[in-house]
Image 1 (tube, rainbow, N blue to C red):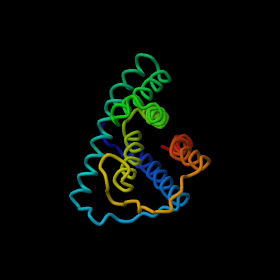
Image 2: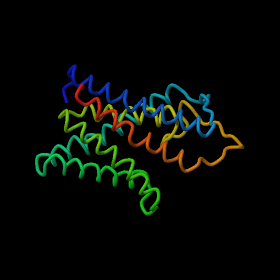
Image 3: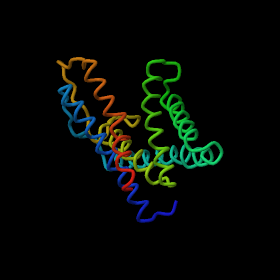
Length: 198
């Protein structure tokens, strides 16, 4: 838990990986769907600070539970691979309840795939570093941009809002799958290839 230069670097690398992936995801989605973003004129400094604090606390809570306690104990009891899988499964199930989608099969499958893969990424980040700084940075980078910048989360309209267009067509399946791959696999791939440098 004590911040060191190496741990702060791990946090920064994780944050930059997922922040870049989140921005790329939303920029590609806007390009493909011909969407426009605009600054939220009703946003206040207080709302931004509250959003930042809310995101920080929610990420810290999840990291302390799923990596700081559960994964830490499970690695010692059942080994790294089983512990990583257990942590990722429980992380996915937690989001069914947390997001209020329990009982809705399609959203449950979609959310589980996203959170399970990212749960594996967060758990491996912890296993590789024996620290919460890298998984926290990865988790915080995505959530901060996803929720606070692009208003995609439980806090409603934040810094940017999507301009509604009347001629908005449904995105075709190919583009949807491409964006899902960007959202789910790009950050874990970047982390995997940079793991020896962190």
